[in-house]
Length: 72
Image (cartoon, rainbow, N blue to C red):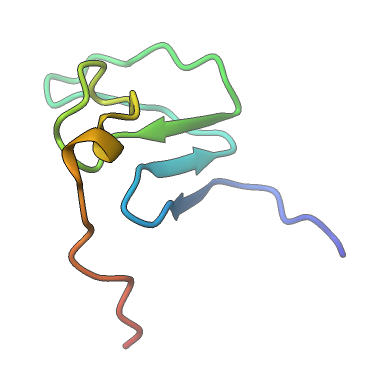
């Protein structure tokens, strides 16, 4: 199987968004976060103390995602 180069965003059920590949992470003010890993987990529950990164808090607060991706 040939690997396709690029960025991939996937979800963990009731957990973070995983971003893999080349990307830039910029906040609302235009400031860029230093990202030194090929894969990072971004908070989806809103309770992380390391926002925008996931710190595992979703499992302690009982976060449940509303739904999976809807195919059009």
